[in-house]
Amino acid sequence: MNQKTCTGCAQVVIPGTVSNQTIKTGYSDQPPGDNSGYSTLRHSAPALRKEIQVVNKPIIIALDFPTATSAEQFLTQLDPGDCRVKIGKELFTAAGPEFIRRVVGLGFDVFLDLKFHDIPNTVAGAVRVAAELGVWMLNVHASGGVAMMTEARIALDSGAGPRPLLIAVTVLTSLAASDLQQLGIPSDPAEQVSRLAALTAQCGLDGVVCSAAETPMLRQQFSGEFALVTPGIRRPEDPSGDQKRVVGPTDAMAMGSTYLVVGRPITQADSPAEALAQFNSAVASVS
Image 1 (cartoon, rainbow, N blue to C red):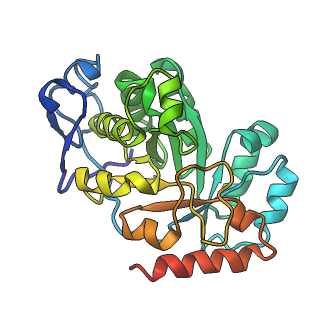
Image 2 (tube, rainbow, N blue to C red):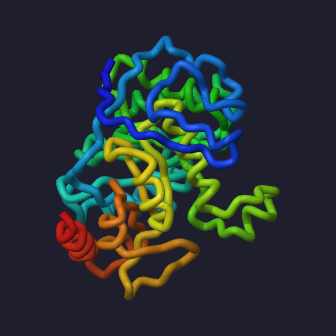
């Protein structure tokens, strides 16, 4: 079981709680007021944090392909030393767990982007099985609640093999304030992201998915150990597609993102390797 160290844990504020209660990232003796509904945060797992600071290979390529064949043809054009890859619902549904094992076997770090959101026991079982596939990172929906996130974290901490990073999705980058209003959430995206990220940290997860627009705010709340994974990355010449909160790679890293998720600007490029090199060059200019 991999242990994690907690250095420089920052103070975070959960918006919308009574008197804006302040908690620490990591594991506390008490959950954040009435937001959690989980009285102990299950201290049976080690109260330690994994260091996440300056990382290599910050570019994660979204493998949004309909078949394993098309994804594998694309991967032949890339060097696993230059990037990581993300496998989401479409490709996972088409290709299944065995495809994950094949990609891991090719040397790629795999971010399994299935956004688990169910009752705590079901999610704990799912992340445990996902870890056995050898993935590097996986995620859950923060809106699943404190109990669900905590049980997922414990399931990974208790595993026998290498422990993947576990992050939470806050607010999808395709959602604007008007979309949240339709869902009955009166907060704007930034406020909701901040609230859910604070709960995520309280549960001991390794980071969150957030748009670059929220990155400076979250980097003020959390130390550099807390990973900020930013989708919706586009160069000025790239169409925004269905992402509503987008930014360029240089700006995203400068604002504090840890990893950048890039899809069509690389997967649909005439030369994916050349496009990836351009993104890596842009990121390197920030460090």
